[in-house]
Image (tube, rainbow, N blue to C red; front, top):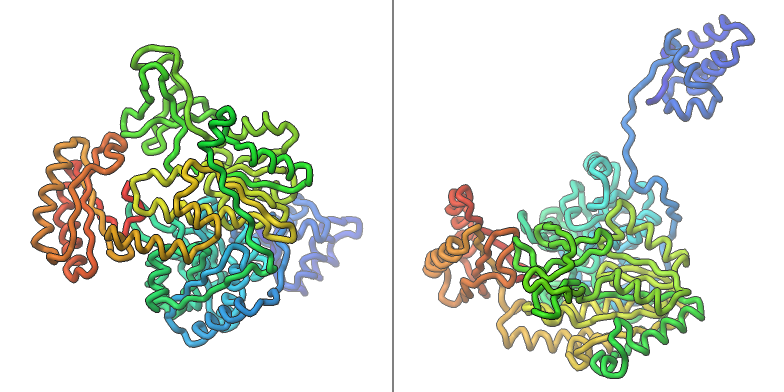
Length: 627
């Protein structure tokens, strides 16, 4: 609520003359209104500035001296944040070349797509910021995408530090009201820069001058349920619509993006060195098979423990990552081998110690932790697998003097928890940060000199042709968190597959070597980027209905597509049942298929009626997961 004079200054002065001399509050109100000279001010600010009470305001309203005005106030999610203003940094030669090329494309309103390939710590963020500043200098707007909410706090601080109130933020960690207000600021042209996760690609920016996509390889840019879209494809569409360049940045670009740069479809900009000329951290591979033979079963190898103790004594910080993808904490009976599974899905239930329950991560089913085996009634039912809670407990026993912060889905569920935990670690309140993939990328803490990957190869066993690429990217990203400032860094990777090519290339920070090797593997198997893919799924509560419909679809598709197009399936999905529904899939692989768009559109329209009977058909163009 704001207050505003209801009279002219002459009428207010006349009212002052009529008020008795001892009436301090009414006089203060009138003097305040005269000072405002017709302007409005929030009631709270008015009372503070002119030292008047709310009661005096009410009296002034009754006397008709002032009126209250409803004022729209935006909810600012970063209002209490202490964000320091920053200035543009001096660029090195590689960064300057990149900024010049991007700025030239902004000037010419060219729809060029740049691949900014830079090792971790090479100063990609500064290139983004100075390129965005060039777009703003021309009166244009800029959009910056980050892959997930955990990266947003640090990136928001950097962008807000440079562009201040011109920045709006959009991600799932905001309340509905905050999202609504940020969206309106953008729509009204009050914010010229937008930073956000996947859905921010739809931000209603006008006169767009530059789109930046940080960590472009991340799978979180793809939405797996309807509407199934990839933020990169939407960004490229907006680039053509608004006539502006796109910058795709990564230390480990996706094979599809890097292959397009190789063919000249994208323009490649390379940052080969760290900005401070610091070397990339030394990476040691620890063979856990040998560790298991020499020591009792533990999440921590002897070399990693010695290194952690050494960092504690030197008052340096460590980051430990637990690779949870494809790896669950489950309950198994030692007598009969029974694994507790979800009654609705074909996957084991995950143990959650915070709620003391077993949970399904697909459908949300929850039940108590069993004391006896439901199959053979034995009491030999035990917890297997490694969760972040279990790792934290073990580490606290091994290093009782260490202050540990844990970052996972359980500890970051509350609003603002990501930023709070990272701020605590950044200010030195903890010695060790333990987390899942969310801590692998984007974080920049100068005192971190040790990074440990506890189980590097859990994703390698997944039935997915991208398993090696994801493992290499994750290991390279998390390795880049070490030794980013003056102190040198060291990385320990614990693995049962020390000779796997993804782990060996990650050890030497050799993206180009990995790219060439993996492209050979993809060519041999006929996988993307040599082929485009479309996944069609049918799901029903009755397995027979889903299977039958997929066979019918196969017969319908064959004559409509070119003979060179490959149709794989129908097969049950690797996780065949989710939330009591059975899933079958067909995968279409093609190099050129002129009839595909029309065929898929026809398929969508013709299957609409069957949806009412319970059968669901899904179409996913270029899926990132076939699970």
